[in-house]
Image (cartoon, rainbow, N blue to C red):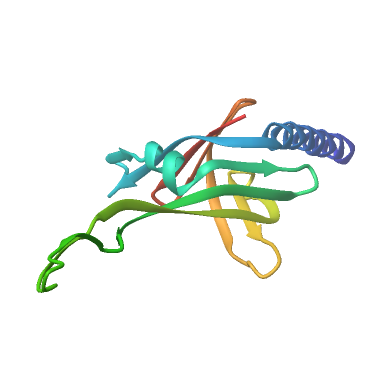
Length: 171
């Protein structure tokens, strides 16, 4: 009885280890943003924020998960600030006889000042809670811990959620 129980236990541990290796193998690689969704109050109301995420706040987002339990996260943030310049005044005409009056032309040039801020973060990752959650721990001076619930994982698609934010990432 003890011998068969021990064999069964070894078999279960071996199968779990094989499943974990397959799961980690699917998780490794370069993931790019496909969708970004915000869930409002109880997940009944969702807002697709993909265009803003991909076009200004997280341009070129990539999450690289490596086999040595490290990750690298990169993107660029674009900030747009309206501005204007008042061009130096030009004299259009003057009264040369007594120089009593001068007409001055001023041009205002309006524009949008774009600031690009690159971000590159590295750290370690871990699977916790029976491989239901992905934990990203920032490295160096960034000791931020971010926890993501893994909603689904295939070879081509990783769907994770952090609070009200849902990320759909693709290879």
